[in-house]
Length: 272
Length: 272
Image (tube, rainbow over all chains, first blue to last red; front, side, top):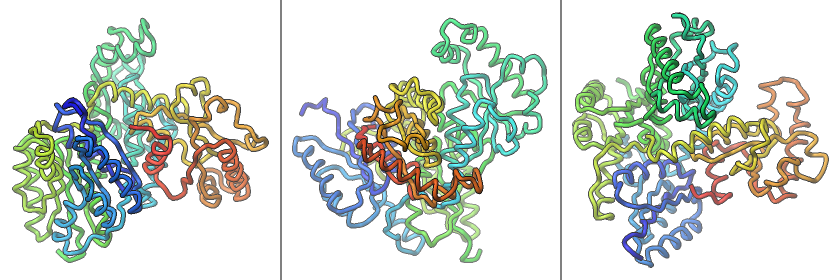
């Protein structure tokens, strides 16, 4: 090995591995100078499987590398087996379960978590229904059922409405529709007619003209649609509309869909 | 308070709060007999904000409740402020950072994590492009660009193709298309023509006839489309097709989109 070899990182789980990846990656962002080679191994549900994972990690350790292992395995026999490996083990469940047992005065069940399983069937079904709803109401496709929306994202084309809508539906089970603002909507002070009854559900997106122009040019290069002038015109018009009607809004230029969703839920005071 | 009062739970973060929610909920699933009242407070970015959160929690503690606080705050001054509250604090960053500092022989940056921020701009952009791609290729809408797909989900109507496709795109940046199997596809042994060149990218979904019949009946009650007989016919035909062409598949009846996505990535040997 040389010192330039990336550090092998394993996210291990007896379920999907999403939790291990999520927190593991948050922790790794604290070490931006280091190189990591990330591997996710989900669904480790038997001690035999755990043993073969340990063999892989021990094989790497034998070459002089120091693997880092984030584990969210819940069953104690699998945790014990993984715990024998020659890596640095960050046990994201075991470390905290004891503290909670003490606080709650009960014992942990030791059953695999399924935090990302079906869980509450009704809640899961409502997330799936929300995804369907979001598909059907993308880009103002169907205005009939706007009254069913919990949130209506409003913005000019290519400001990030669609992925944010999808994220709100898939992650949070929110019925989210979206509505594109077009040139005619900036010709008068009023809200576009389909939105008038639902102003309290509206949330606006804006972005920076240059960024919008770049994104639009990927679709239609050298079009007036992608021109800086047109983008600036639409964004100024949109922001004026949001201000005039008290519609909360945010600039999507430097934030992710996850951050937008969290901000929207916070500003709309959704408890999820 | 009575002993039936749910335990207040706070997910605190200087970013979106997703990580705190995810691991916190995994830990709470270990205590299925307890009732929890969950609250997420994201974007705690100043010490003043942290102080007012501490006041809320201390107010609850003063009534005799014992709040549980999961925190992923990264900046040390905010962590210290939150650490003064009268709840049980599960510090998901602080607990593990020291261990990693030692393993890596460097110091943590102490910068807020933004695990759910834009991060690597190219990777983020590819996730957004993947969402667009998934929207455009939902339900076999556009067959032209199937060669761009990394995964093609194949199944009869209402087996869970759309939300799984969307999840693969949004969470993992995978270019996922989906293709509905219909009656004609079961009349011969061959694959549907548009799929023939791409069999190695195909992944099949199936489910239980009864479950499919229930889901279809929500859309079209008393239709032959929703009949148990028709559902059984399509699912048997689909499974025969998968087997004949060596297409890996899974039963979506009792697993979530998150679990399906993890299984698909694992079976298709995607490293993500």
